Length: 361
Image 1 (cartoon, one colour):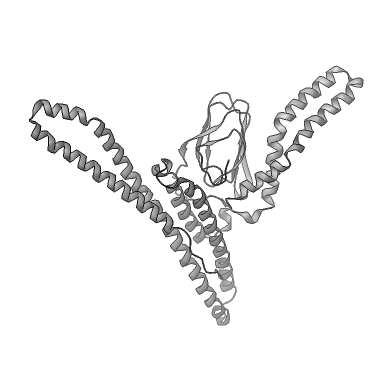
Image 2 (cartoon, helix red, strand yellow; image 1 turned 45 degrees about the horizontal axis):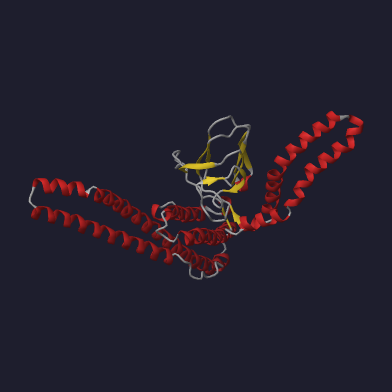
């Protein structure tokens, strides 16, 4: 799966990073018989929960925005049937983990490079069977033959996932979890992700009326770049608070003052960038509304001939013409509105492109 491309389905076998490979939400598998899944929850995916073996028939799973990754091994695929549910327990929403959009492709390249070694495992099992068969008999060879088949089927996905997990751990600087931000940083990141999701899930984006290719590449990159800045700001903000709490000496306060001013400049710059993304999301929502109205008008226009016939049968032609002209004018006006809102959305998307940010401190 291409990094940054948000699909509505998940392949049956593999490990997929939430917020990178897959969007959070509720997914359904038509037949999970004998398969299994694992949700890696908690900081960095440190609290896995799963189900095995899955029963025959349909099964569903809720992938939360705070999940780190989702691992699956089923014979078919998962399709998203609903977006992530809003939390109704009064708890504050948490942003999802964020990673460098290029990370998944890089991991897959490393794993694929070493993939031929995986097939040595079943060959090794068969070799042991051939060596031991003169002493232990044909049943020994048959048993190891069956084991070799199981290893051949299971080893590739398991081995690749384990190798990918090890490589991911070595690249801890390439992804961020909610624990890498303070309360202010988490709140700002949640605003970013809400805006990104609104654009990505908008109907005009799905229909290709926005630049979907550019959005698929640009929005994940923007989310990652902003998250990096927010994490640095969170770290520096925590350090300043700890330094201020350690002593009330005026010299310390004087030394902190210029550092706070630089941090404030960085916060103001990234806030402007977040607000630009939010304007883009708002324009996409407005374009969605115009698109719905446009489709409604198209449906009405498809019925226009029935109204024409009715009017022609009941009133004079000179009364029918103004009614038809008004309908056409309304259609033209709505099309202009839709085009204007799509143009506004495109302008807002361009506005969201980042200026150079000053160093945070």
